[in-house]
Structures are given as C-alpha cells and as structure tokens.
Length: 154
Length: 333
Ligand SMILES: [Zn+2]
Image 1 (cartoon, rainbow over the protein chains, first blue to last red):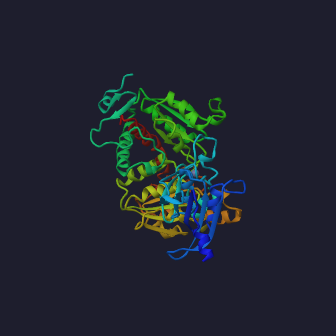
Image 2: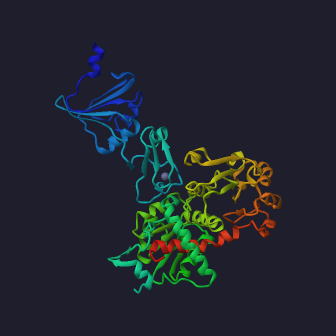
Image 3: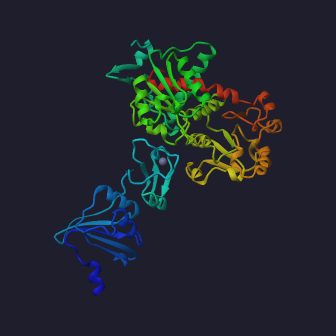
C-alpha cells in the first residue's frame, strides 16, 4: 500500500510522463537535460507494472512544462508515452506524444558524407517513413535509421 | 529578351516566372529540379524518351535546335568529372543557350570557404538553370532549398546521378522501343556501384526480369533489395553463365581493385565477370552490352567490334538526353 501511494503520489504543478517503455526513462531524463544541477524535483519510477499489463517507466517533473521540440524528442525514444500537464493537483491536459511527420533539428544524420553534417546553414532533417516500427529517412542523403540508430543520434 | 516563337506558344512571362501552358500533356518537370530519378514520373520518362529521340535525329542531321537562345546554364562542379560536365555544356550549346562554367568550384576564388548555399544563391543571379556535382551526399537536394531556379544533380556522392540513369534507360528504349518484357542483367560491383542502384529502381517500374550477377562480396545490399517492389522477377547469381543466354541487356560495371583487401581474391574473380568473345557468342543476336564508361578490363577490346556492343552509342546519348531534359525543364521543348 505504501508503495502504491508513492507511485501515484500527485504533484502540485508540472508534467507527468507515463507509459514510457521500460528502461527508456533514463533516455527521457537525458533528453530533458535533467541532471544534478536542476532546481526542481523529479520522481522516476522504473519497471512498474502497468494496469494494461506489461511494464512501463514513469517520470514526474515538478514545476516544469515541456516545449514542442522536447515532446518531439520524447516521441523518438518513447513512442506511445502519455503526457499529463498538472496544475493545482489537477490534470489540465493529457495527450499521447506523436511522432511528427518531419523531424527537423532533433536527430543528427550518422552519415559523415551527408551534406547536413557540413557547415551549410541547414538543420538535420528526416522524413518519417514508418511509425511502427519507427523508420526515418534523411531528407538529404536518404539514409534510413531505425529504432536504436535514432536513439544513438539524438 | 526575345523568346523563340515556339517557346512563346508554350510560355508566358508572369513576373519573373515562366508558366508552362500545356499543349498536349502537362510536363511535370517544368521548372522543377531533378535530384533523384524518383523525382521523375514514368509519364515524364516516356516524354524524355520521345524528345531525346527528336534530339538524336536533329543532331544526326546537323540541325541544332536553337530553342534556348535566351537561357544561361551554370555548371558548378565541386569535384572533377570532365565527361559529365562537357556533356551538359555541349547539350546547352547545341540548344543555342549559353554556359557559365566553374570546373573546380572548391579551389576557385568564387567559393573559397563559401557554403554551397551561398554559391547557389550567387549562381541563381547569373543563370536560369544550375547543374551541380558535389562529393557530399544530398548536396543537390540542399541546393534546391536556396534557389527558385531548377537544379540538376550531376552526381552527389550518394550515387544519385539521374541523368546517367535516364540515358541508360533511353539507350534500352531506343534499341527495343519498349522496356517492358525485357530481361536485364546487371554485372559486376552491385554493392558499392550505387548508380547501378538507381538504374535498378528505375527499371523496377517496368515489367522486366532483372538478373543481379556479382561475386558474393559485391552483392546488392539487403536493405536495397527490400526496396524493390514485391512481385518483380529478380534473380541473384554469382555466375554470368546462368543468365547470359536469356539476357536482352547486359549492363556491365567496373569492379574496383580497392574494394578488395586481398589482391589475389580480386585477380581470381575479375576474369569471371569480364565480357569477352566467348561470352558474346552465347548471347542472343539482338542482345546489347552496356557500360557507363570508363571501362578498364571488364569488357575486352575485341567486343567493341561485335554487333552487340552498345556502350559507345550509350555514351553518345548523353548529349541528346540532356538536351531533352534541359529544354523540358525550361519549358521550351
Ligand atoms: Zn543524411
């Protein structure tokens, strides 16, 4: 019972990221630049039994609300994660992260011969070829990246 | 600016942009860039064949169609490829247009330390159509983002070299008057030879049988095979003899020595993939041998005099196909 209370303990203001694939919460923390220098509280639950069966991770961040590009990044490592925005202990908004059709300036192209890795005034740009499993393709050199390669190049 | 009469029929000047008035079919290529062969619809490819054929006839009759007198082409070559550059420039000159050429942009003062984006913006001010060759993959695609003028990719490191693919297709079409129903065998380096990949992709739009003949270490990559539409007749073999008798087209590519750590391995297998009289004897009478050139050892000189050799003819189509393409893009075809 005590455990259960801890996991569902509400936050006053902030963001709850739920249904993160098990083990991916650390990647989410790194995407959000959450390290020892932050001034707010973050609670992480790893490998929690999900109500739908199976396991998941949960990240609760107090007093921080996420930007569009941060949500896009999360969608790359944790497709299907849900975001709840909490204000005054109430969920004011809840949605599932969505993989954008085009990924601009989020994933770098691992192809060293790709023009997007040179000094040109452009951001790395990928077209999403498949959502599930996720496959993205470099707009410039056409290289295709899957799951693990995307995470490695975030 | 005075436009030639038939160009006036097809175009009106609205602001700075020429608007194509379709007479028969709308040409999708009008004012478009050509970065990858996938940018070109199959209908447009048919139209390119038709217009290229007219250009071949015009050249044979020594009648250069002066339909591009008021147009300027810029050729920006960030790596040398004299053959390709001269082919584009000859095409433009034979159309009556003018050419601005920077043969080695990276070492010239025009572009020292300058980004490709800025070089393209500069070229835009001086020309109507820009041809780019660049060692980095995706360079031509990037160039399209910094100009409203059409860009033609003349090779960008990724093996995207759409005008080579078009002239390869045209050579086959010209010979057989159709691509459907043919058996085409690609021979040699099918792993690194990525111009071969875009030709295979383009061929897979048609009802063809494709044979892929290479040593195991130079086989077409799996991820590329996965892109070939399902239901295509594709056969992978190490043995040229397996396919030689049934082939209508033998497309031979160069196997580079540098691809082998062990030089003995290279020497051991190079013979099995080179075309000599013995191979030609087994071919259909009507079959043709193609090669993107330059060749080294993969086609023996004795083959040059056979009725099947078509690689010099193929190379000669470089100019008329580029003439067709440039005039279609500029809307004066
Ligand atoms: Zn790339």
